[in-house]
Amino acid sequence: MASVYVLAGTPGTGKKSVAAKLAEQCGVLVVNLSSLVLERGMVIAYDQERDSYIIDEERVVGFIEEYVSRLSGEVVFTTHYPEILPKNIVHAVFILRTHPLVLEERLLNRGWSRRKVDENVMAEILGVVAYSALEVFGEERVYEIDTTTKRPEEVAEAICRAIRGEMALEPGVRIDWLSQLPLDVIKRFESYEGSSD
Image (tube, rainbow, N blue to C red; front, side, top):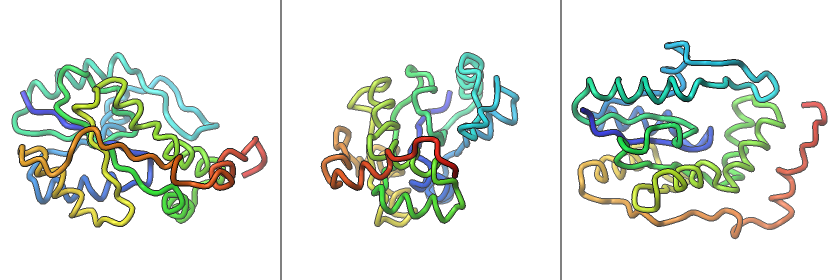
């Protein structure tokens, strides 16, 4: 059975770029969980308001357990929702974090609606992805990495060293954007109240 790792983060924090470098530099198999779920039809519905799919979590968990049992080496799943992966098979979770104002700019450059940008930036401010991972996997298996000023290859190298047991990263180091941002900036991302995009 493969050793399972998770690369997670709010959209725009660099998962796709880092995953590509991880596969290239570290020789690990990288699997985009969202793509896998869509390819295998493990979707219950589509939420138009949030522009996202609702997945069949039970089916996904069963599929992942069976899928990794047939693999060897290391596999890294990329996702926004690390908590969906079975706790018993995950060695470590790497959460990519990006300064909220930098993240806002990246998401706006993608052409996202103001509502979707605000929701995702607020999720990053509150550390929603990290919190979910900590709840399921605990302090000792969750690593947060500030990608704001790092190149994808730097982040991939640090993750690769951690996977290889060289521990370039430390569990328990937490990123707290709430304490770093002025209240008026935080409130700006709360302001969406159903006004038109």
